[in-house]
Structure formats: structure tokens, C-alpha cells
Image (cartoon, rainbow, N blue to C red; front, side, top):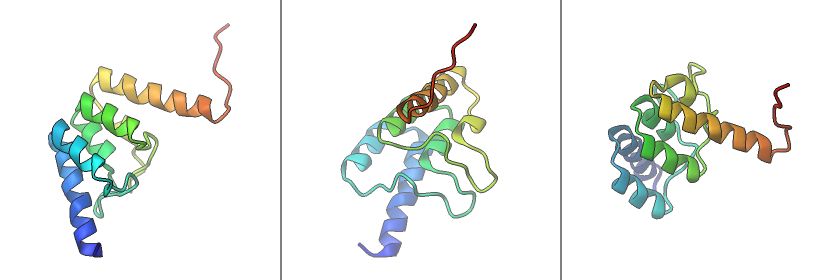
Length: 112
């Protein structure tokens, strides 16, 4: 696939996630052409940044299940968690971060 065609596909996916089109996002992920680490050339946002900022709960869940990194920083250092305003979406992102942390062998925090 030519680089410009690939870039167009990735940018289209960012737009789909930004708009919250769950069915189209699923279809695009299933075709195997989506780069989960692709960042917008201007601000460095991934599809997860866009979905989180727009509080698209189902899209955020879909992207996390597909392997998108909830701790991926944009050019300004902001992560998807920094951009979200919905408590429900914020909780999904926090849980994903905790799961990834625990899978890497870090110990869970125990309150005393």
C-alpha cells in the first residue's frame, strides 16, 4: 500500500473515532489496515485521544480492546486520560491502565 493511501486510511480512522461511528470503527479495525500507534501529524493525537476527548465510551472501549495505549502521549504530553471529561470514560481508561500495569508484574496498591 502506498504511503499516502495508508496515511489517508489512518486519518479517516481518526475522523471516524472522533465522530463516534462505532460500526465504521469496528469495520476499519477488522480490515487489518489500522495502525494503533498512528498519531495525527499536527497534534500527535491517536484515535483513542479523539474518542476520549469526545467522550465516546463505546469507541474508547473498542480501541482499548484493540490494543490502543491509554498512556500514549500527544505532542503536548497529554494522554487520552488527560482529555476526557466524562467520568464513565475516565473510569474505563483508568481501569485499562491498572490492568496493563498489573499484567506487567507491578504490584497492586493495597490500602491499609
